[in-house]
Image (cartoon, rainbow, N blue to C red; front, side):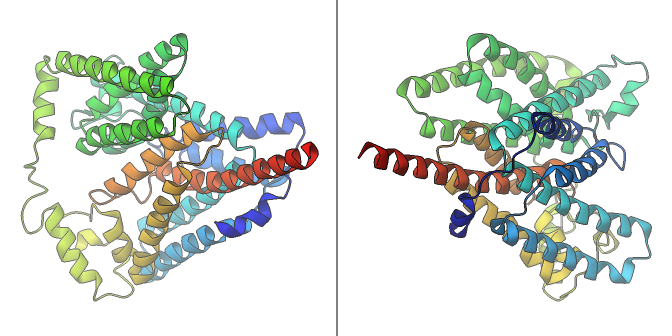
Length: 422
C-alpha cells in the first residue's frame, strides 16, 4: 500500500448534500438487500446495479492502489471463463460465470465507494446490514416455529431455519458480521443503546442456532473472541478495556443460560445433537467431504484448465465443499492460484490496518474478523457466490485506501500545526 500515499494527498470527491444523502442511502440499501437472496436476480443485484450507475454519475474514483485487486479479480474470472468453454452450452454454467463476474464488479464497487466518505458510508452499511439481518432472522424464527401460515416450507429447509436465504448454512454465515457489529455496541455503547443492541443480538443468535449450521456456531464464537481481543488491544483507555472484558463475561454467561433453556425443547435438542456431531455420513469415507478434497487436489494438479464450473459432482458424489479446491477445478491453475492469493493477501494487509487509528476502527475490526471467519469456512464449504463475502472483501480494500488517506491528512495537519507554532 506504500504507493497509495501519493494519492492520499488528493482531495475527496465533493458532492451536494442531496447527492451525498442519496449515495449513503444506496449504501444502506445495499447492506440491507444482501440479506434477501432466495430469488435470482436478487434485490441485492438490482440495488448494486443501481448504485453503480448512480455513483459513477455522481463521482466515483478508481485509485491506483486498487489495481492489484482489479487485476486479481480479472484473472480469477478469466480462468473461470476459460475452464467453462467446453461446457458453456449448459445454462447453469453460463449463469454461474455471469454471477462470478458480477461479484467481482461488486467488489470494485464497494472498494471505490468506501475509499471516500468512509466513516459515514461505513456507518450506513453497518446499519443496513443489521436491518437486513433482523429481517432474515425474524423470517427464519417465524418459519421454524410456524408463526406464519404456510411459512414453514418457505422459510425452513430440512427442519432448519433459512429465512430469506436458499440455504440455512448461508443464513448462519451471513448473520455473523451483523452479530459482531451488535456485540460491539453491547460491550462499548451507552446503556440504552447497549440494551437495544442486546435484544437485537439475541434475535440474530437465536436465528443462528435455529439454522443448525456447525460452521456458523463455531464461526460466531471464534470471530467474536478474536474481535473482542482486538478491541481490548486497540482500546484507548483501561476503563474501556475493563468494560469490554466484564461485559463479555456477563454476556457469555447469559447466552449459555439461554441456550440451555432452548435445548430443553425436545425438537431443538434433537436437531442440535444431530448437527453438533462430527460423525456425519457426508464427511466420512473415501468420497466423503474430506476424502473428496484429497482426490480433487490430486486431480487438479493434472488439469491446467480445470474441469469447468459446476462439473465436480459429475466425478464425485457431491460438490467440492472447498472454495480453494473449487477455484482449481472450475478455473484451472489460473483461478486456483489467483483466488487464494487474493484472499490471503487481503488477510495479511487486513492485520496491518487493524491497528491503525481511524474513526471507523471499531466497525473495521468486525468486518475483518467476519472476513477471516469466512476465509476459514471456505475450506469446508463453497463460499464462491456468497454476496456478503464479496461485499466484505471490497469493503476491506476500500477501508485500506481510506485509512492511508486519513493517516496522510493527519500527518499533514500535524506538520502544519508544528510549522505554525514555530
